Image (cartoon, rainbow, N blue to C red):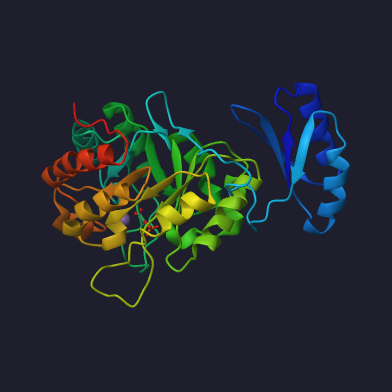
Length: 344
Ligand code: PEP
Ligand code: MN
């Protein structure tokens, strides 16, 4: 339920509501808007009506309304304004500006990671990506460099002046991710790893939650709800394509998800056209389409020699194509009322 406080309700009134929500066995989440504050309370659905009636009587409470959507904190009902997630002093995801995340699929060496970082930064990328723990389909494929890979990524990010993102596979590695990365990625294969999501809910670091390859949008929002409900409000959704009968592309990039998510959630949405298509030459058109459809940013894989890449070479952009992408998405961003800082 949502407890809507009156305009200008005092902090004391808000705290009394928060305490009452807790004593009823619900978890309170205070959402402070420009006009007024609301307290979202989640817990046992069966006692909802009784608890709502009690809370209506509190000083400073304007109204108490049920959240109809099954996922609560992720819903637009809980928060009507878009969530903006500040990554560092320079980068905000979910604001007016389109954010570009770029880098190799896997961290392969320090030298190469730093080189890629400098290049994508020069082209205008805002965040550096790189996998250190790789969720490979085959156990015989390259599995990543683990913690050493995270250290390399962090160093490359520092050298190029960019925050970094990398994928976590195992909750036991969380301390390393807290130390070395700015955004923790949950991959498609782990979208419903609820034990992992619960651990991520206990920290404050932003989490980029990729859509499971066979997940509906609602299942994806429930996965986001796991992170939000434990207290981590910094969730970014990433559409990366779903499995369909189509075999011409690696996945089917579901751009429908963008307006559907806009309707259902306040969380920012990033689109990954690299995994979405699986072919480097389809990445630019789908990146443009994603931005035109309202995505808050894109994530793309970049490698100077894709034929030698240890993973996902066929979908990786060479430097010149990445520069071209940055050039071509700018007018698309501007046409839909967004901005994009490129190169230099
Ligand atoms: C990745 O980003 O390298 C990755 C493995 O993505 P996904 O989880 O979408 O397959
Ligand atoms: Mn990849």
